[in-house]
Length: 416
Image (cartoon, rainbow, N blue to C red; front, side, top):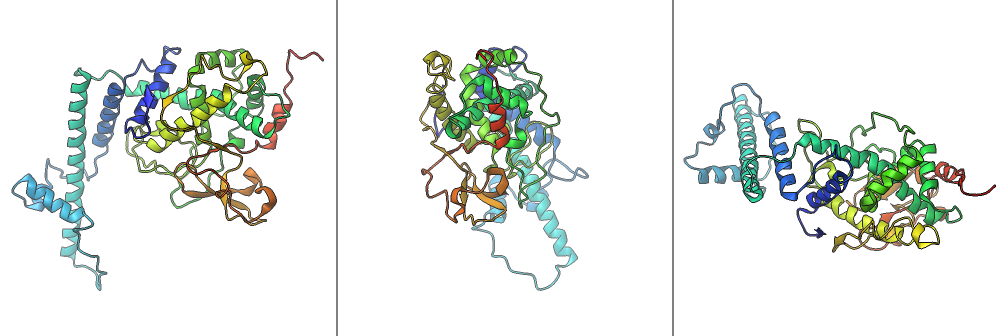
């Protein structure tokens, strides 16, 4: 499977690759997936959410009742009338009201809003149904192959256990190797540090900041439990070697703030919920329309793969990643170069917060200075000027608690 940067199906293809890789070893997860069938599943879920969450008050609703407002004779008149109301170029310029509109004017404005909402609602349903019809014809079947609940279960495994364990350990290893080369590098040591720090969420996931677009941050309902033994970890890693770089890439993105390009429906429960929220804990599996994170995930994964097959023990067979078991992704997306600090700017010595640029969406946000520590030298200069152009992979130094946990590991094969 080739992951092309300009492909509008990049996200779905990447999800398909992840789901298929997991399904090979976990029979209770999602069955072997095909991009056409994933499209059908996503469209049916989108239609289901739309139907279950009507955009109009349910009282006195009738089929195509919005036509009464527009008083049109055919569909061409309808499109022209609607676009004259919603197109910015055709809409008359806004003039501030000098007095409160009359009750009759308010009634007409309300009727217009309801008519436009009803039109948009009916148009969205028709569009999705037309897309579904075409998708079924392309797939050559008349029924859905996948159940959305099964997809949710598999997605939880990928973005939860696999990302939070395998991806987090490889993420920690990369940052350890860059900033703490005096500590021997191994999977066992990094897994030990993950257990000692109870999953390291509080140490690696940026604190939620209060912004105009932010809501209450997501929190895991269950706290990290040290239930996975070293032998269990090794078995888990052996089953998912092919996607280890992708899981590490997903964990890097999970730990940083990100603002999605557009609002999206909540794909985990019924009902629309705005996901355009500037927060951490995002992933490419938030929605199939998320292309920015998909491209970044591939770019980050390519770097992790290239780095992992070259680092570890001095012996080739003890490298962190085996090139035979972790093949390179076929893509035209270049590996993102790593940087040793977040993209901070305009820092002045003594500032209690850092202004940081999200390398994916290019929006700015703030985190407490103590989370990363003050920039080196404490000078008022930007990291942006030193960073390579384009997408970069932030791999800052590890928090002191994680460094201590790494140092506390005792290799059982080392003689006292």
